[in-house]
Length: 158
Length: 215
Image (cartoon, one colour):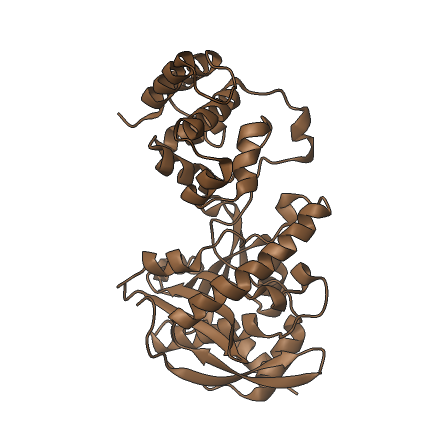
């Protein structure tokens, strides 16, 4: 398809536009619940479970954060936020990408993060219990491995 | 269609605000490997540089460019082989300045009884250096958004949709679509991440074209 448009029209409109933002399209917004006072909100147990699941999974695969971020095609800062800041609200896309790489249900990971309200909260409670059994050290202990196995089981598609 | 091999090329003009003069450019009827290469090699590093500055300044993420996570190569792969998607790109000085993907399967929300078809702008983005808000100074080139909307209108006419165009605007672009293009603001759409939905009627489309022709 070709179009015919006069230079005068282009220039006139361009001067009005003046470098303004013109972007259109979805999957671009930060989560709407993000607020400046988020840091003051109490930490939800499910967020702890999400943080533990991502960290344990990464360590089990012997991946650095940089490597996992590359595999999942997400920003390193996003992954660092999930693993180190319990108040951090990740992008929807980030969780989808992580769920794919880590082999668990996208919906359940979203529910665990608080980005969506799960209809069935039992798996969240179960995930929280598994997460509580692990402590953060460099190598996975048998207990941590068991906790991770449990997390994977409850977060997988059935 | 997806990655185009031989797009139709229409001569257009952009505006260089620093020089105060028109610059010859081209509207390509498609997005090619060259465009995607420009996006990967030129757009993304520039965008990252700007994000570092914003991050360093402690600017809230909600204020960062909202298209920063878009992956144009994946978007093109997603519509591979689909005839309902028409793509456009703008090239000037041998560099891609903007890209757009449209979808011809959407229906108008205004005058919904007629269920008229329209050209829906699925994605539209301009190069980081053409966005005043990102670079904090005069853009290298201005006018990409206006040309893309004009292209969407012309496509709409060609398809028999009478100039009808619809899109979900990124929040930072609401002013452009509401006030410069003159689109009807149908408010926040909860099904589209709370973005505002804008629609151009045949009358408003004609007014937009005529507006630019007035001295």
